[in-house]
Image 1: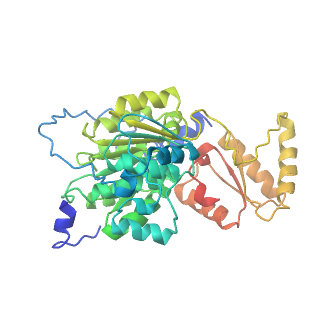
Image 2: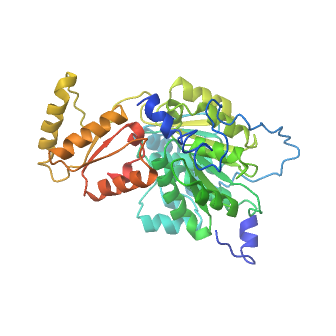
Image 3: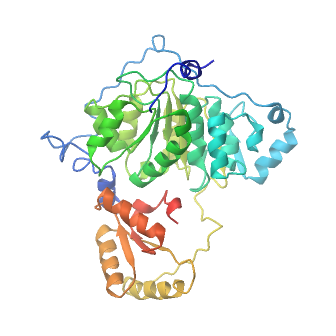
Length: 421
């Protein structure tokens, strides 16, 4: 019997390019660092992220053991023929690399998920797991290290949140001063907040507490959440480094680590911060890495952080266009862009569902284009790295509701905006 199931009877719980990247790296050294709102501490200008953090000397013989294999396949899964298993993987374009790979969970009835998980799955109206979930859950629930490669919108968030909740529910309760049990690193504020919503939805029934840590927002509420104790911390790397250096939290209890959108984090220059953070986590942790692409840099990171891992890919390993989307490329001169943009908007305005996202390279150009559109009557709004978190949230809310059907953005909005479409 797990710690949680034993103790719950007697105890209740209340649980563009570098230009934009500098600001979106949690506004390191300005908003995310001690340089502003930091109580008069020195500026971080010229410092390396996490330079005050020292890697602990981990002695595995002295670390408290923890459980991480909770997978008990049902007879339905065990008795499924090799032909059926391979047909499922072929039909779903699943390719695998690794040893002792478990059979997939093709239907929710294939596995005895805890009641608190199934209740939320039924409430959300899911009929069956997505391919990344069906094959990924058995691997993750075994406690294995795992790389999942799939396009955005494939269900990967629930792919790691559900095993995280099962993992947490088998660990001892947090004690005063403990940091999170599950740490999820994400590249942007918007993606981190979306992950928090999923974690809260699925963790509420077992009173698992979650919080979101990111730059561009007040530190006080985030620090209070961490000090009260949270089982799941979703963080962007710069702000988490800031809190670790300041002693506002620690990762001594962290046994479940997720690197979400790993390729995007590397593209934004987060590798030094990620390495500093991972150094603070016990080496026998479980690590899950998720990515939309599989470039050499992500492969190197996986080799450094993961042990005996299984690689799961859904679709092509190469960077390719999404075949479910019509893509038209129009090569033109810079002087022609404004005219062509307005022609496109006029054409799309004839459609019933006419939400439009316009990606632009620089923050200044985003502002210029937005002003130009609004001056000619187009209901456009914009987001980029210089916008406050409150303003970004409001703009995305307006876009989602349709009150502002045109969103102009830098690559800060390139991923993780599925719920706003």
